[in-house]
Length: 251
Image (tube, rainbow, N blue to C red):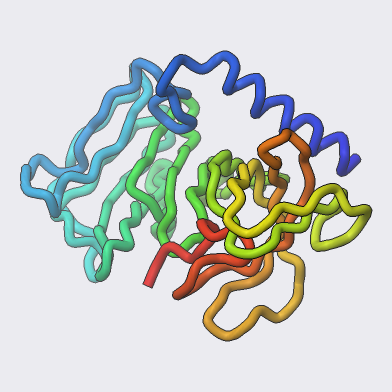
């Protein structure tokens, strides 16, 4: 089953790349053509430029309130999903460039506590599913989906996270047929080699060295095209080892 998931993920990645136009990237603007960008606040300076991308047909209005003690933007965006369901969305840039949206679910007279979604790119489709792009305090850019279940906003788990980037090896890179150094050897790349990182998998469980994050398994491809897993020590202050660009993006 695990190998079937890997095969499906790589097939989808190759298919997307083959069908994409020159310069196209993964993300909201490619996946949701025709959506409208709506600012949360009408104020024009940098501090208030947060916006949400809405599906055609979704109704909205701005309400001149902030979420007390949470958001600096002095308004929220109310999005009407149905007669019974509304979302109220606030935004805060964070104390040190840690942007986040704050979403409240309202059904009739009921109201949820706010749900925090890190990031600076939020899209809402006609079903009022939310799609967020974020690298805040993470090791790579995450693309996440959230669904409304009752009064809760639920993050949908993914078996893997798409990365699809190339970086320089920070040391010798050993590829294996299974995550976390397990399975058979696949290839060995020397220091400074270009390594294409395809997917992020599971944490490997070992205690990392001081100044680094956890060890994580990444599915990578060699310049020749061999594919295997690499166990990487996430960088914190320094570059990741042996995948230099896999490092903590935060304070």
